[in-house]
Amino acid sequence: MQYRVFFVVFVATSFLLIGCAPPEEEPELTVEQKIEQINEWLPDLKMELAMENKYACCLKEGCNQCLLAHGSCPCYNNLQEGKPVCGECYAGWQLGQGIDNDFTRDDVKLDTDHHH
Ligand SMILES: [Zn+2]
Image (cartoon, rainbow, N blue to C red; front, side, top):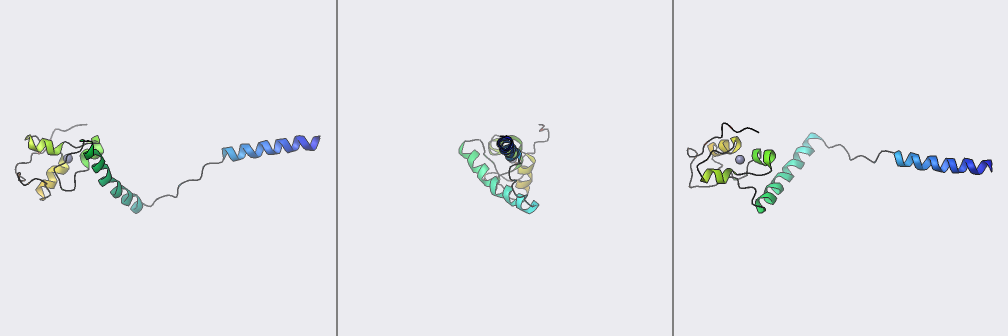
């Protein structure tokens, strides 16, 4: 009798311990691996948002500023409407990374009072 009670307590305790054990952790990524991961994600994110008509950037690579701040990019539309674009797009145009040959870097205006 005594033995049986002991056995039940033992089993119950084992289950409790297993239940409380922390789940196996993902191996920690190095900084380089994290950067690699982000660089893999960014083009996919842009593509996905572009398909939903939420991302229309005026740079060849597409800016990250609008993507990360809003989950969308209106810079190409803004450019066509003569409105200012984000800092990253503006800088991109100055470096010749603009996507549309109808515009030159002098046409691109910087959004100086853009606040979040
Ligand atoms: Zn932008």
